[in-house]
Image (cartoon, rainbow, N blue to C red):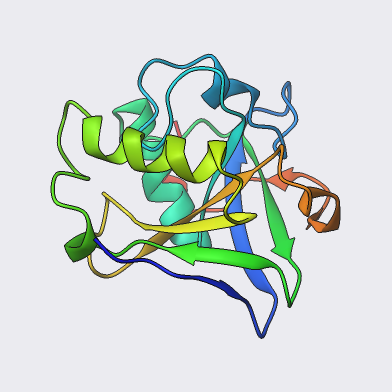
Length: 162
């Protein structure tokens, strides 16, 4: 298993979709979840996708439905150039995609607890080997540099709306 922390040369963009009733730049949901892929309880990790379409697919998988509620909103998150980033690729961590989540949670918990980087690039389960998700450590010392757009109404093909 090899991964390296580096400082991004360019800003990284990420997209997150959720309810307008909750702040989207907040890892509180992951902190109370027993089913998060990359962290166990008590860790404030913000899950986002590298691309908007990926965020739509991730939300559909989370909802277990190909219909997305039209009431949801999205934000574009910007992680500035120079931020600390770590990447784990699918082939680097056997079992990352297992239903029991042990391998991915152990890895993510160590990344979070050691505050190795602000962001962790991980493979997306909705398109492994093709897409990545971006996890953000809300308790990391660089978190104050993260910026987000104002929430906007979800945009997708009308047939995808619930």
